[in-house]
Length: 237
Image (cartoon, rainbow, N blue to C red; front, side, top):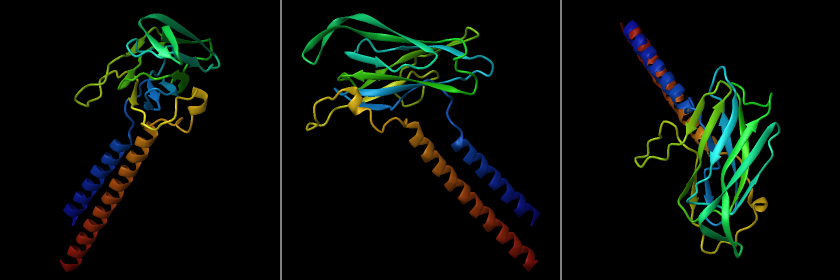
């Protein structure tokens, strides 16, 4: 009986650890949300910046737009307490947008916090950017640098790996899909900023939550069956 109860407790502990592992979030890093958009269209993306330090605050964020996949229009949404400075670079190969030739494009945006507006420990901040028309590429990699009040700089610059594993310091990545053949012409960004404000991490969190709930229920059922078996064995002895 005691051995059976010990086995039941061990199974329950293992199941609980499994549930906690599923529920635990991945290491926080700078992300771009939503994670997908359509080639040739306009979209609003949000750079979400969590503060990972226990003692220092985030004072600056630098996001680099890929020079090999430039966009003609880049608009920034003001963030209270932060100053945004876009930097334009002359393009080696001009691009076309709305029947016009674009010879320079924004390749870097730097947000700097005023005193008192820093991203403090245990908090995060979001920075919205409107982009378009999006290039005919598979993805846009936004290499980001996060500066802390103690002088530390975290470089979120690792590009996606080919084997599917997440790099140590992943850069924010916007996946681009081809537009449908019968899709309407590209609209201004203000018209297409729709119900995609929620990032796709939320969907993953829901899936993990459901998986954790299923695992917890399974552990409970196993524990009850083991307890019932132990009770029957005790009555027969």
